[in-house]
Length: 155
Image (cartoon, one colour):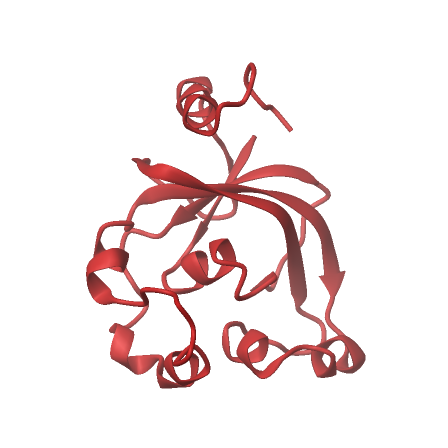
């Protein structure tokens, strides 16, 4: 299993299925299980995300600073990296307003598509790294125990 560090609030919006893609300026050949790791600190204070807060105003999500502070530097879910799409104007125009404000959408960049997202009941503290990184066997075992998965899921 690989890990991917994503800053809050993007990591949680992905886990809550409010966004489907993580935008990056790089791609990888890897497809399979990814541990979604919330970065150790936000890019900016939560109040800077007015567009997102407005989009979620009628949603039942508890979009608050206390929750985000409790997730920094932790694996909060696993997901399947289904595909990595090269961004085109056509792909960008198909995205919802919320999806577009939750990423850096520009032709030539990449949209990482995630499916089968499973939040962890108890996020696991782990040091994240840039790029895709290997999740240790010990952490994979903790994830498997929390999610009731049989054996360790390598991919």
